[in-house]
Image (cartoon, rainbow, N blue to C red; front, side, top):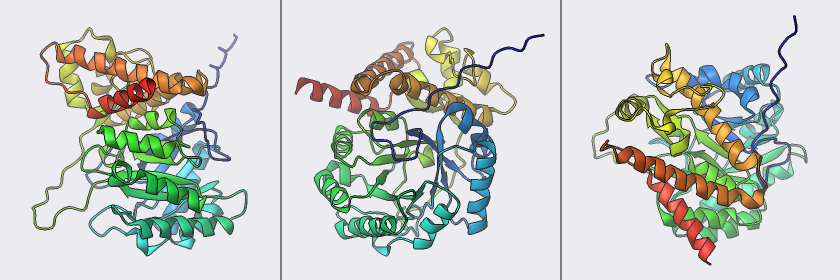
Length: 384
């Protein structure tokens, strides 16, 4: 009896300015351990998906001690020996978040390098709007750490920024990045979507156009747009709290905790949606092709098979990672970089049409504002 041939290996997702030693420009930003009342699907599934889908991982590790960090890296390496791994100390979020002027921990960077990671992400604090001194503190200390790390160990300066750095101070941000001459990765603050406006997208494109193009972590589907416009690497969050970070809540107002609802990517719509919302839309318009998915986890089935599975959150996570990687390969691995922006624009326009098809059946549905913001920037560049 002859055995079936193994399927061809999938291509990693490239970047025009990929950091040295990395083989993929697309990562998943997820948790390193389950959180009380939070989703656990990523923790359970990501390690097996890394090698299969040729993506990397960013683990958010707030409050993790050295043994947790080492265990996370060890168990990931056991399942995916060559996977790209970044560790996000996540010090820039929450009511007691660290501020940029507090500087960086040498020990956090050194520990990542001792664990064999090619790139160590700094434990940066929040860079408030206009805090140029705080920005310089991160960049200059990261540059010093890089000088002491050697040529085969990179330091990636994390820049958790107020959105105004893109909308109002993009030129200043570019100037500081270029002056420090250090690899950087942005994370953006906003109550909802930091890249939902033309001004924010325009500012991001400007920053990505500099000679030392940064990466973009903790993002949603705009991450693919960032790759198209030159980001060194991008990371898409596995649920809403890791697709941006929010401002510190007003202590004078009541705060209400909530358990995040399971969501998954609908690739043709270029967005993540709650499972219950997708189920209602499929019921209203079951024949729409947008609900069919050909990713490695779905194999051409309709997305309600995920919703009706034994463990929907885990299946939704597996589908989302697999379909995101497939989309990344379609946009970037199967064509030359000169076409990436145009292909991204076509994907955006197709997504807008698909959203309109759902809306046309009188179903409550709304396309993300970021789609239009990206399309407008492409049209502006084209006409200039």
